[in-house]
Image (cartoon, rainbow, N blue to C red; front, side, top):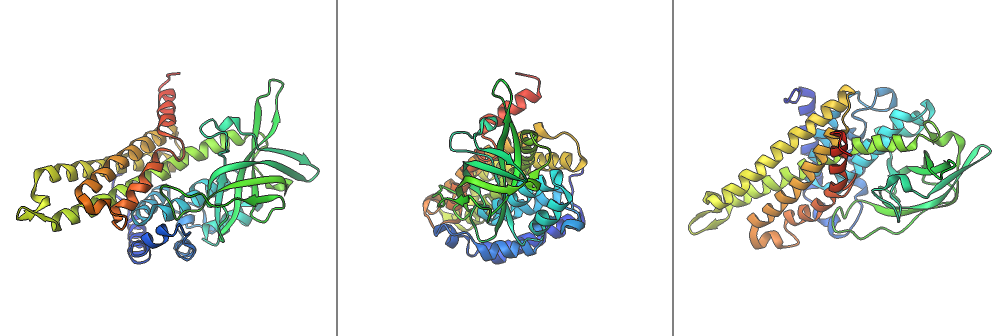
Length: 383
């Protein structure tokens, strides 16, 4: 595995880092405090072409690679996790599903504007009574002539109901066998589809500036052409997407850890106690060394998983390992960052307090830590 970034990847890294230093870090605490979706900043991120890095030029992309996507997500998360997850869901979940399973018409109609940053997409799987048990979803779609009619609801859907949201990919049961086992299909549901509505935004512990809402489908009608891929194959489609999404989330965790490390080193060098900077004390040095180790290892496992994706090799186990390690390491790193900052770290206006709130959901989104351990064990042939 090549561990050094290419020149092009370094250009992308610097571009996104400079953007975050200029447009995100100075004002992130403001929109987070207001629980306000940063529409204009997301538009600017879209113009950078980040959402289209891995897609062909024919669909508005730049013919890049998976590692370029991970580098960009890491830098966005270093700025603000809410911005990063918005782009991650739109590109790595919604966009990749369209690219892998969509028809030519669907790609040109929906993928191209996502890749070009004109719209964002969302991915609706989780329901009020089902999260980790994805195969038990109840939302159903029935074919009526040239339309599919969808009924049901979804919960905790990122990117829902924003001025930029153009579509949602919705998982729904389309048939059941004699034993009641569901066949699931995925559908592209435009934001203005009749019978589709969006509930009020949730008030969250972290990711406060990302848009997360419930969705409702009451005789929601979409054209038959909006079926994504083969009918009844939706479960395999979204399980693949979740694996890919875990790699993206791992990159976000690395970016959050890097931000905490940078802030902690800077603060420790400036903060003085007993006549010298606290960075001179071994107790603080050990914390910083452990944080740096976690960042380095997290980046390695994430880049390894991304390399497998790019080469078209199996990556389910490595995606779960990357997501499990980085998400749990992020909790330790951010906790130490607050500790290094002392009382200041506990204040609401301290930058590390925002990262502290954002870290926890990393162990929940795209499959909990418990589910990652199950995936890894099964890939080892256990169970």
